[in-house]
Image 1 (tube, rainbow, N blue to C red):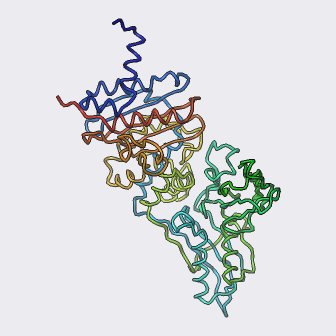
Image 2: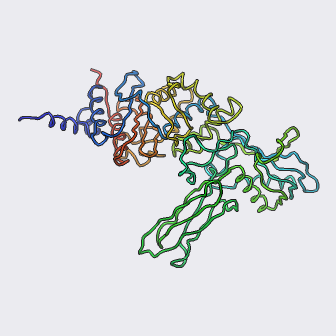
Image 3: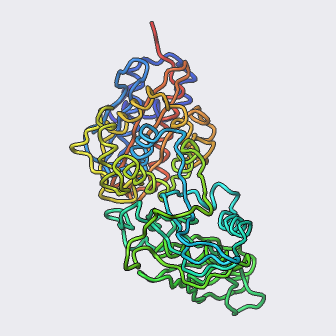
Length: 498
């Protein structure tokens, strides 16, 4: 039988297409054969117009299993969170906690607090929502109860938000203006409440052609909501609900059609000026709990004079969960707000001011010690939302390798999404040897997909990998499938020790 060169390539391609089958029939693949099979996957002609950067290395032997453009620069998307969270785990430690304080420089007489209430932000992203079963205003309600226990029924003053622990850069460098309404691009600041968002619910009205019913949490007057929705018949089968916040304001338009029988629409929408938002809600909660406030909510930046804390008395406080829990909320669902707060917290704790620049200055020595090329690295933000971020697969593998030897490796490792199990990998790698095995960080922005992490082979050898693709125009599922297939090949690999 005559086999053409093309036919031989096809045979070799399909020999490597199913990693599980390859392992099933030959459990002792030599490392060179594994590398060849992986290469065939990345040679897929559907990605001819795309750029792949790949590095796979054994943590046991330090040998490179496969490399492709490993020193080239790629947009990482949320793989940038590996740089942020590994630095924070090393510099802050797993037991680090934020403290947010409510203080006053006034005095209490006859149930009246004569003076301002001051909310001192520390950059804590956890003060509401995520870690208290979605009870958004629970902390503020508890603070109101604390004031009432002290006998305070009236505040003769303002409520001021002090966000001076961080700088005034509310957005990451290079973030797109089109994203400003969306929860994943919420403004950044030392005062943070409910991810600096308002949570909306849209349901159909009782009658066709009427506006839909809107509700939002917290139920605050800080936002001005304009309802331009309409309920349509079930036969239309429509859900075209969209949200738009006018830039520089808190006017939010809700538009579109929702058919009878369709699911309720839930969406978190950003606010402008999170500090003012937070103290506005705090005032509303206090008044709902029976504590009147004569003054107004204020951002510290609107004051003529700087605040003086020499004689300040603490009335209430909030202590966050430890960073070992915060890092999981950052990495598993890939929370941009948590990542941005974290990089600035590094700067605040190590260089006295929270900013992207101070965060980088504190983190770079750690990253460099692991082997990251910090001269070429372009870290425009802490989350990876910016298209100005540039890393190499070698950088990502250096971090993952460095962390594997760190005393705090376990909470870092456990914070990463697990293939087929949780986080952003919950629906991927199902039914393969990578399911329940791979711990890796995903990355997703337009025409960019990244996956970097750890996988353990069939005989217990741990591999570290980074697979980044930029500028592809095939379906996203195909790029993710290729990454997942390579993970399954590594998970099924059994080293030939002969």
